[in-house]
Length: 409
Figure 1 (tube, rainbow, N blue to C red):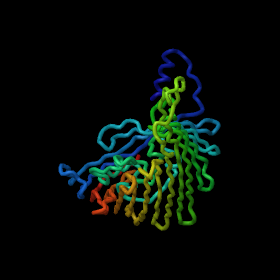
Figure 2 (cartoon, rainbow, N blue to C red; figure 1 turned 120 degrees about the vertical axis):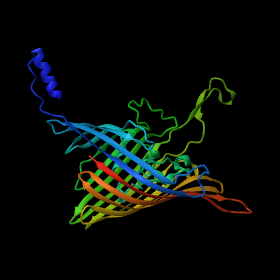
Figure 3 (tube, one colour; figure 1 turned 30 degrees about the horizontal axis):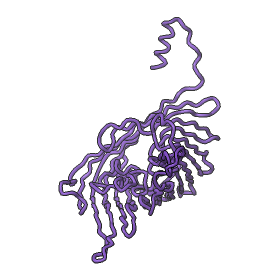
Figure 4 (cartoon, rainbow, N blue to C red; figure 1 turned 180 degrees about the horizontal axis):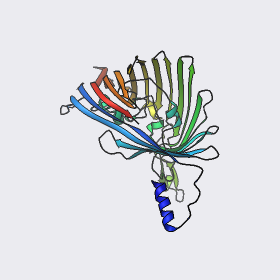
């Protein structure tokens, strides 16, 4: 349509049309949309008296992904990736999610610049699963019943997503879609290396200058990842590992006259600075004769004193491709975090989820899924009381049975 309008305008003006360019833009787009109906039953001693979460719920999640690109005569491909979220976990429009430019070639690899997850995150792998996705990097969006209704790890200080408490797909300090530059090598017999750098922790279109003397947000985030994917006969193997760190920064305050001496104004740290946050993880999958086995382990180090807000977690799962359109599977995720630690008092948070699911392919990009999920979040607090020592525990248990349609286009 655009070419027809341009040609019509040229004829109307009596101007000869210029020769067509050798390169043509490929205006690709795609995406996904999932709709689920879930029936939930919740119990535990950490549920307020005025909260009732039992009953039916409807969950929607989707994105439309635009990926226009053009390949030049020199073989390099330039393009963009813009992901528009249809609905967020709260049910409202969420606008643009990831958005970045990429340059790639057969021998140079791939460069990405813009708001996107790190190379370590994107090269990671974990347990296979069929159903709702209990090892999701966005558990609040994909598995909302697991953390309901109170005692959210976000309140504890680790954040819900991109953190080992709820998923082995982690990021440094739980950052998400941060403006960064990433490079991926070409695949060497199935081996791909990736490295990323982000000046700060923001995904704004124009992030401005980064103040590295502020510990409000992490800066100078560096990530590295490796993924190996290969087939040996009828056995598929995927291995992955990643590591990342960032600068916690400083919080300097102005002191006009230290010691009462005039003309000696200085900047000095306001508080003892935390250590730098880190994350690392490993994962593997093996597929043979219709079976796929896999698992992963990850940690987030907050850099805070006494290990406060440090988290770790692991996934394990298996799926089986039945003869015909059905796939069945079982998977679990187990997470743990330190909510507080001072003297003899220590608060430890735990999350565990188990899922049994089945999925039937109905057609090209259309699948029907059914699943059952049992999950629990809890906090155990040491009680250093000479008369009644022990551990108090707050917990929320959730049982969910759900069914839904998954669309990929």
